[in-house]
Length: 251
Length: 243
Image (cartoon, rainbow over all chains, first blue to last red; front, side):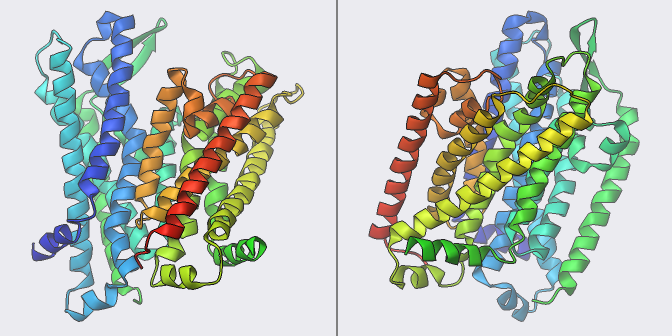
């Protein structure tokens, strides 16, 4: 807990939250603009389903890159300041540092997910959606987004800490954004093994074209649960491998 | 002096493996775009133009600008490390040469990326079974894409020089791609470097630019490069460094 507090203390002048909010504002603004245009063309689209589906699709592009930036900033300060040796001489275990950095990155990204939900709700209410706020759908949206993000954080943290050159970590984030955006075009087998595709894969809403008309379908929760379990297992695996690898690296 | 600075920048890039980063994204863009084109040939009937719309959209609209941002952030990474700002500013080298050498090196890297992208695009089209001749607009798209990439590079270099963090300028670059898309949609594309890339590479509209449009495009890019470089060099020579 003390390590987490210290990580947050180190970030106090880094304007990390400001940057996350700035990028989120661009994403949310873009998603809401696209939804407004879609509603003006077809008033039937004025529902929570279309809004959640739009933001899930946008998350596929934005959140991998945002996560890469966020994690890179949290990890790179130790590389840049040459503080690894300093930290290790105060007898802090490297696995504790790794865990603290993971926790802080998760906190920042969870705040980002929560802000998205608040923005969705505000947009829906302001646009006078007829249905009441669907808390169940929003809860599923936030669980899916947060879970995928936390696994991506584990992956990004491993790369950001193991490789000093942050260009690699950010390139992985960029490739992740590409995969997240194009996830629906990929075959199911390929999609299953690429973690970035789960922003749309775990979204409570899916889209389908029937007779040249787009329909929003609410996914069955039970069909997503086994996938979530596998993802949690994969996330824990990536985290442990990353933590062990980084702890054994020479400083 | 500029020549020496350029060779120094090349030396800094030695063993950086930046080429891996520069190559992987065009490969993924073309791979996914070509597969999508191949699977939907019933709808995408305009051969090379349709392939360009699939391949070029993601590459030119989103990932090329971010690739430029990563590359530019990398160019200043060494200066932000240790006490290297003090070293570089006390070296008998004009600040103009320091900044311009980085821009020139990024420009050369971007030429390589564009050529590599063209080769992949050609191979992707041939493998997807396109038999028609290459579109005559293609050279213009690639060249104008490179010119716009120089404008974006000068902006990103200026940001990365000023901001010590490696990732923050890339985040700003991500936001800028979307602002650029908005400006393009609002027909204000000439007033933002990222929109100029959309116009130049013909990623959203595969029509060729007229002579006057091309001239205006080049003038706007040169203006951006001149203004941004002058501002960045002035700032570098006047403000104190934080090492």
